[in-house]
Amino acid sequence: MSHDLLSTALTRDAHIDVPLIGGAMFPCGNPELVAAVSEAGGIGIVQPVSLTYVHGHEFRAGLRYIRQLTDRPVGLNALIEKSSRRYRERMSIWVDVALEEGIRFFVTSLGNPAWVVQRAHAVGGVVYHDVTELKWAQKAIDGGVHGLIAVNDRAGGHAGPNSADALLDQVGDLGLPVVCAGGIGTEDDFVRALRLGYAGVQMGTRFIATDECTASDAYKRAIIAAGEEDVVLSEKVTGVPLSVLRTPYVEAMGVKVGPVARRLLRGRRTKHWMRSFYAVRSGIRLTRANRDHAGRRQFWQAGKSVDGVGSIEPAGEIVRRFAAAARAASS
Image 1 (cartoon, rainbow, N blue to C red):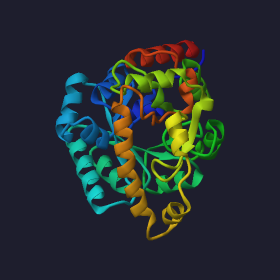
Image 2 (image 1 turned 90 degrees about the vertical axis):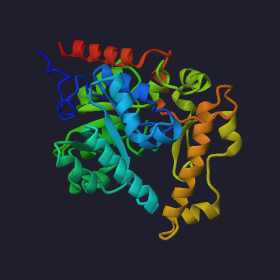
Image 3 (image 1 turned 135 degrees about the horizontal axis):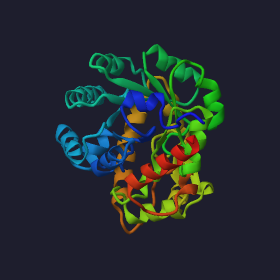
Image 4 (image 1 turned 90 degrees about the horizontal axis):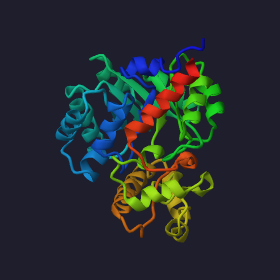
């Protein structure tokens, strides 16, 4: 008898049935999608900028709306990179409100998670941190996190430099559960990650092509039609490489920043200002592309798991199908 692939440190930490995280997405993480992943037994993650600025919910009201859709656990994504003071203050408020509203699972990224860990731990919450290599994992452990989300070279968004296998070799023996983020599009991918020793997976791209996701029809069709060779890294969105679909719009715009921008992005005194500038500009671009149902803008984030996406279906059905595959592989 094989061990139960569905019983992992992630399911225990997050109080869920299926070791599957519906990754936080900007701009695609609408409340209905977050709730559908959680309701089916995984855990949907709220991206606060997406919830408030893209989908138009006052933050606390948005969390309460999600709670009306499901009584299962949901999580919060806290991007904690050093940026503007105003953004840092807003993120601090969002974390406190989330805790007040009963959220106990947090995914942090891009900075020192210690302050989130301190607040979450005080009320029995847990924090998993995004890492792309060993040095960031060690810094996260120094910050007191409870788990690691290993972002590999097949991920959407800001992908890492390492394969899923190589990254697990780097961070798998540090004493914390590790979640695989990147390249998970099919049941076989899910089962393989769990058999490798991952405590679960995080999926974003696969959940864009779902009934609940409010992304444009053009975006969803592009996800279905794409193969992994259609995913390229563009510096034009955030200033650092971001995985997007190669479309005529992206090709015409180019994928590299100019020499002046590159110098400013690397400067000790200018890099945070430049990243804030790119974040605002990219937020506008991505939001407009997400709402462009005619598909004229064609500026769409995606990971290489597009290879395994063949149809638009309910998010809950994906979670249930993946769970069934892991259950069968455990017997």
